[in-house]
Image 1 (cartoon, rainbow, N blue to C red):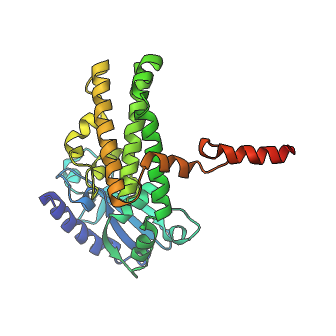
Image 2: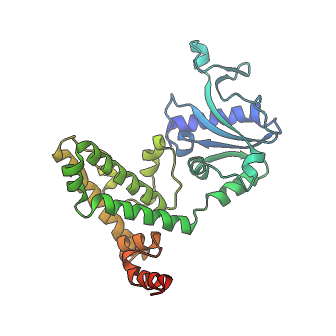
Length: 293
């Protein structure tokens, strides 16, 4: 945890005691972003999810500087240096009645933040229970996302596809196919670790903190996420990195017992329908019966 994180948590807790806790509508207060991860800088604002019941938008503003001297809120666009020394706050104010409803689907990115959030306050403990329940990663979803990632990584990186794409589709589309492969690799790693995907602009920092990554990926991430140049050499260098880490990912899945033949199993399981190559004989029997032959 950075010194700035510790200082800003202390400042926020003082603000919370003074401004938020006297309000009975405040059900829970969860820090997200850098105040949760512990990587705050001195100039970082404080991102907070605030669950309210009843829903009251006049307890705190959506974003503001707060001055402790007179308990006042001010625009974040203020050019007054005295105001800019205040506590900069960014609130996501949510209606707990809506979020508590079992028929309301929590956005995955927000769920990911809540699952790893800093719970500064929970009036009755109900929000914490809901977060714990909702953030459990279903095995069926994990399997489906792993299958999808493996299938598409094989499509983009196997079968000579990178060379064919460069030769027939040109550099722009070929590079874009590698971007797709990278994102499927990331999706697969999130699923493998049972972690919800977060906002794209925060994905890299979350990715690098996953419990398991292929050995060397963190050090190579710039070369995996980007081509070192736009020419063929840069393109193929990225192909090599992506292919290496896709292979390492498959090895880990096999070692864990999730798969024996990852590519074959993933494709077949996600395409279980009549008329595929592996069940064509049965399909023909059914067709002949249908036609009365």
